[in-house]
Length: 282
Image 1 (cartoon, rainbow, N blue to C red):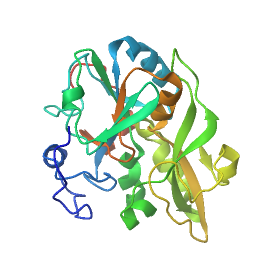
Image 2: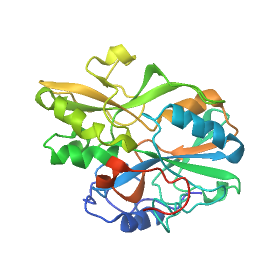
Image 3: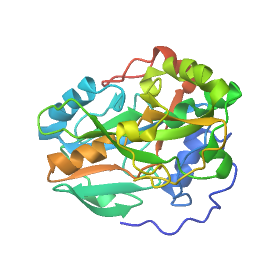
């Protein structure tokens, strides 16, 4: 059920907002835009919601594919409160946009999932590369989609994930143009943050990983790659949505690409982060 139209200008500067404040804005339907650049310094997360009977298959899929699916938190069946990563939040209302897949088909995009919620739903929060963008900026490395106020470009590749149960499919990647002189530093900065995808999975020629046209991403917005820049590709938490097309679960709910959940976890703590498989944060 829709909660109404956004009343905020998506270009408004929310970089310094607290996660709790920003989530309240999202919950009241005043923000439905992508979340790149908001709440800088806090970890953002992808969302996967599945019936409990498929949760173990997906957990194994994530463990076997830690680059695209680094788990930050797993909620108890039927529980919408991510008490480990964002106490008091509500996974049903606190993301700007959700996608609903039924039997492998995208059925709907909506601003909350309250009326779809089931007592057997298990929610997974997966690390997002938006979380390391402040570290890139702090290192003097530009982030093009943030500069332009766009969503990050994301592509389906020819890199196959390791299957688990009903889940299988290609890896999705996000792309950021990096000045050639800064590639080594970008790898160093992101490699230290494995909880949000870590180092790039590919640098350079997009066709090597099956991307025919870098100006036509499957998800997000295109951004220019300027002279002297090299496209760098990071594993992306949209990968489970590609897996949903193959698994065809009766229902699977995810975030809409680029519309993430903002956690209370500081990005500086992601270097030694331990997944919250229940319990409370350190």
